[in-house]
Image 1 (cartoon, rainbow, N blue to C red):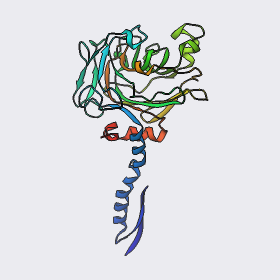
Image 2 (image 1 turned 120 degrees about the vertical axis):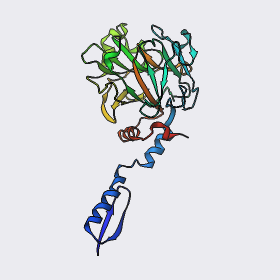
Image 3 (image 1 turned 30 degrees about the vertical axis):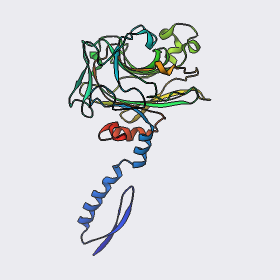
Length: 307
């Protein structure tokens, strides 16, 4: 009779066995625990979650600290939420919730005949602060960038104004072939836009992180995570993760980030996005690299983080 130690990431114990072959089988079984997600990380994510839309029960959010309804409107050329006529629901013609085509369950689908934007109101759903504003955005995307008809498209945009002032966004730009993915986080336009040229200025491009040839393709789900640290004593910054891997940070954000949080919205599909979205979540802290990987590896998405 022989003895051996079976070890995993969380425990070890002594076991008696009669054959080395049995020992190998037992060891392989228990090594599976090395891939288990630590419960402490799941708990930390749960405590930090402020908003989640899975689209499994319809377009409204599953979880939120504030209004969970979805709304529609046309933000093109407009700078503020209160300037735009909006209605609740998925617009006209309505966007679709497609069954069992999401990363987890159902998904929100944008087609060529949908030219409007849908959005969530973020008052209380995001924890804005005039000092030390920190947070994380997570979503899954499934698209073919070549199908997007316009030169620019912002699949997701968070602001109370527009893309060049006090805004957090990701965009797909077809200036290059293949198209690029860009992360933009810009504070008060009156401070950074010294040339008053908005998106055409050098200062605008200094803020951006550009990912050439991002991993988007039709039929493939890509996890996109953005973290930000703004309005602190140090220069602000934002980071981008794709499929659980760190891909870089934005340029320095020296200007203050000012919101009227009662007007802040998370806009989906600005610039005629075509594709699918799923499992959108917001957290009130900067997720660590390990926490981003935990989020990426959740079996049923952010639904695991709330009742």
